[in-house]
Length: 442
Image (tube, helix red, strand yellow):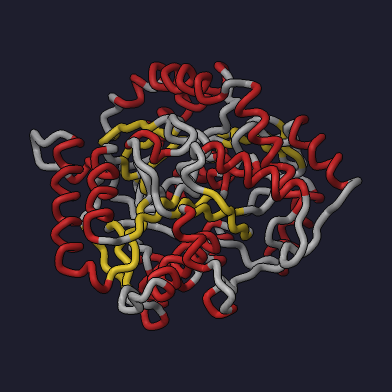
């Protein structure tokens, strides 16, 4: 791929100065970085006029396209008022308004948003809150956590402890607290003839048995509702969430819903847990909360949790903080994102768009190398039959040649485009993905 001097200079500077995330840096000896000069809508553009369809929403964060004029305008307006102030002992309109609107989105069941900057930080907060709640409630022995096999909740030490992806976890195992994985309701693991719902119920029974034995030492169960992302877009029936909620209630265990990826319409409802008709004790939010603009995360909790910390004794308070907690610019971007959801009836529109993409992908689903084609809301995934250990990186490189940004998870290819993807872009995405499968060796 021919690049300009400007691109070459930027890439050399980046390799010399930046440690890129989730990357074995040596691979960039043969797989060049992609220089991005600007972005608009679903497209990224380099310095040489090449474009790339952002079919994964820049790691699942972008909802309404790059350089969205309404979010741009909201941030610009906020810049002239207040950029940031500490949230300890102070407050400001964007943080208060966002907290109120998020609480309304849960029907008032959850509130008192605690803010941080990223998903892993939100998970850390929820884990600490749950542990501290039980301590404040006279049950200090409830110190352990339960998560699903294949779960991913982030890469800080607490979040990594409840993650079950070996690639991320094994190296740091000596640093981590102990947690207990239980069977994942990922329907790809169901027995022949077993429906996704029946398999979810079977996995829920295994959870119930675990809690029956260990409830006295278990603080919380943490779950990615409906879709487990990093382990290969593992999708499950909402029956699991219903039964998990009932089991947690029965045995006095918190339910933490990690909706960092699945929230804000990704699974077809505003929050994924809505599809099970349940309310978690803690709700972790990030990624799409600002439309992909600025770092922000939030943890929402039931009022009973908040009240357990409300005391004259300082040590019973939740003494956790981040310097940029509740950043005014990020909160304002989030408010603009919520405005778009309401004004454009995004959830309803996405249902129509999801059906359209499903129709466009029918031939791809029947491709001879495709297995387990699946869809939940605005997420599509399929597994590719391949013996190539470098399949993911080869597919990524070939996709870039075809104007697509796609980053497979192992042998799982997935689409998670911005909600503003159009008809021509849908057709291009599906057609060129099939072409890559035809071109890559098995």
